[in-house]
Every structure is written in C-alpha cells, then in structure tokens.
Amino acid sequence: MLHDGITQRQLETASEAERRSGPRVPYPSELVIAWHCSLPDSTRYAIVDVSNGGFRIRTSVPLVQGMTGMVSRILPEGHEVGAAVKVVWCRPADNSCGYDAGLQRL
Image (cartoon, rainbow, N blue to C red):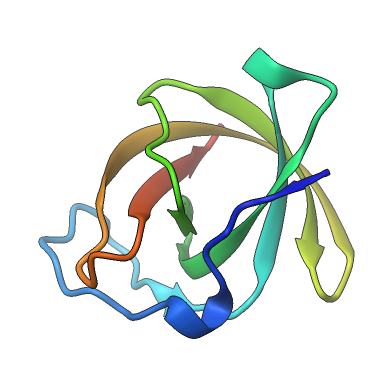
C-alpha cells in the first residue's frame, strides 16, 4: 500500500462556493483507495471532510478528473467501506500544501 505524503496535521479547512445541499463535516481520518488505473495497488489519503455525496481529500499530487476507484477502508478505525468513487475536481490546497480533491460516491 502506498501512503500519500500529506499528513493530517497539515490539513486546514477551506471556504469555497458550495454546490451541495448538505453540509461538509470535518472528518480527521484517512481513506484507502484502489484506483482502477493502478490495480492492485492502493493509496492512503487524508480526509479533509465528508458530505452526503462524497469526500474531500488532501493529496500530494494532482488527481485526474474522472479517475475512478474503490474505497476499501477508513483508517484508523478500519471500517470497511466498499464504495466506488470518482474524482470530480482537483485544485491546489488553500495552504499551498498539496491538492484538495473532491470524490463523488457512485
């Protein structure tokens, strides 16, 4: 398993225009995602927040819009998820430390 280099301590919440009906909720954990383009490898990402429709994660490299993958676990709890996700946006993080990416649950 790969571990994306952005740590939870480097996360900050960002204010931006919202296109969702529900609120974003801070969620200090990590996702384990197996991207379809790089199976069988999986990568850990810090979660910035969650909403009804998906996740916002922090990554050290930009993710390609449209990439799909399977979320297998939420760490450190170890909850199994088994949810398909798609990258719907990716942009530089407000704190100039990596990138924020929006993942939509499919």
